[in-house]
Image (cartoon, rainbow, N blue to C red; front, top):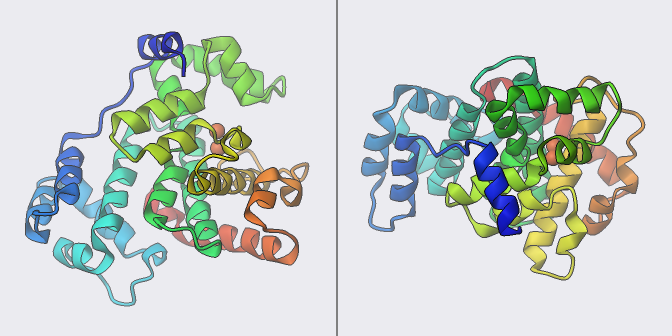
Length: 282
Ligand SMILES: [Fe+2]
Ligand SMILES: [Fe+2]
């Protein structure tokens, strides 16, 4: 990203920081000398974080057969990497401050893309599924940051998209001089998340820029893009089902080798998983 673009973004947008407790938890989770007790104590200092983590840890998403009713069990049963992704999920949700219709739709879309990415990642046997989920959840965070930072200008973007049928990237570029993938990527970097997450968010509307580079990154971006397309087709976090979208023809599906009945079944699975799990991410 050119330095001038980054300057323009940081001048216009208030890039959110990771909430304090979440930050401390993430540092502990990255520290090989930390113990589950230390992580537990830090999370427990924030009641709402604790409640949200337990709620999501008990959702079908983590597929635990027995009820997890305390933090220590959550950490031991679902593991550090999953707890880290939950802390990021809760921190991401906090960026959606003014929870009006726009934010609700954007959040539902993000949860759908997160759940869908996780499912697709599992299907193509990609590693680091917790990161894949986080990436889906954060992919459009740039939109929320732009909306929080300058709601009047973002309203013009929404009008341009819905009333005039413009593409989000072009309308954003016209109104702000930059678009949401660049903003989202800067937030991912600010939160010290892995570089491949930053790149996948940056290129989620232009995945073939990553062709020929690191194959994990290209697959991750393709998963993100396919999950995004599936959610738009199904109307998850948008104004309704969009039959004009043909998921089967997408470049992302081709990159992942998914087609025909297998892809249809995956779409049905994404819809089912989203409907079952959405309330846990409220
Ligand atoms: Fe996007
Ligand atoms: Fe999206």
